[in-house]
Image (cartoon, rainbow, N blue to C red):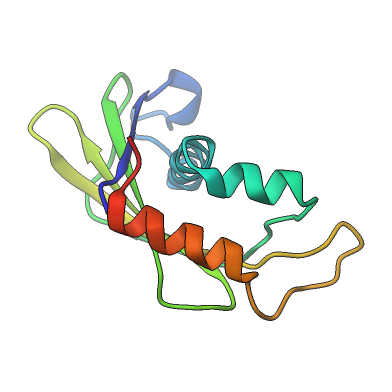
Length: 139
């Protein structure tokens, strides 16, 4: 699958006194990539239309280098197809200048109904959309 790319300018408020972005902001940036991927695919509309929620059940990040104030960073987000029980996203964060890898991360999400009932298997229609998206990519 082709990744969804989002550019973000590192803001002053995201940095410590040395001008380095705090590590917690990487997860916000990953979320922006995930949101953009879902907004540009039928998967996001399917989840919304059917009244599902999409909680995180696991998340992680390997930090390689620090982003600094005024950097333009690029989040690349990919969707995996390994599981029929949850959706998993991979994220890569690059400094735009020189395409320096700053971090690699992932997040896993299950679907729940509005009343909190977890679906232990993703609906077939959603699995088909995930497979199609991973084959074709997002435009």
